[in-house]
Amino acid sequence: MATPSSGATHERTRLIAHFEARSAGNQGSGWCELWDRGESNLWDRGKPSPPLIDLLERRHDLLEPITGGRRKMVLVPGCGRGYDVVMLALHGFDAYGLEISSSAVAEAKLYAGSELNNPSAYNFSDINSSTRYTGGFASFVLGDFFQKDWETNLPFGNNTKFDMIYDYTFLCALPPNMRAEWARRMAELLTPGGLLVCLEFPLYKDPDLPGPPWGLRGVHWDILARGGNGLTADLINAEEQKTDAGPGQGQFRRILHIQPPNSYEIGRGTDMLSVWEKI
Image (cartoon, rainbow, N blue to C red):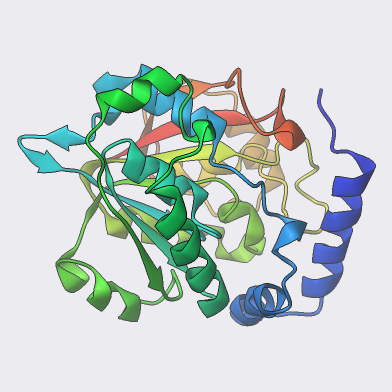
């Protein structure tokens, strides 16, 4: 089992110390402070998600960027510097990145302005595949995921529904008592039949240890398929043994659950990639 390096452990210890005295309602300001102080290196990976790139390029049956002549819309909440947003645009999607920090939005716009014009090879599993796609666009929105005011900046305002949402380190950054609301908002923002793609991280960390990042072993199944709150360890451990045969009381059905051969070093060998269909 892969475990984080000592340097990574130190960075996460600093994150835990920064947030340990903050209430759930005061998390956003904590992330804004870190962005304003130039400390995004505590979590920044420096490139888009390798498992998501592989999924886009190998599972066209799930994730074609254009359907019925319409370009699909994708949301990346907590998008940071916008690596995944830009990569999705380069793969033909109209991609929106949401950030609570104005500093993060400004950095993401700068990154996109440069990267979309001269894409780095890390945006593609196979650089030859870059010729397959007609690029979409990347747009960045300032706002709190759990509020609705930022939705007025979307193409159809509060009626906008996304075809896909991607989550890597957004859920694990939230206090556990916000997990059920995360699942509810994901369902609210997706079109029926839309896909929620999650790179589940960290799975090596005991869910009872403090975060961020908070350990998520079994949490996705509990809150998405079962409709739980992601807090009761005995239920989580029991539910993660179930198959994809039938959903529980949640709003999602899991249609793919694999260990990605390529992932970031910190989670390689323990990360799982899951795709959930909005019921």
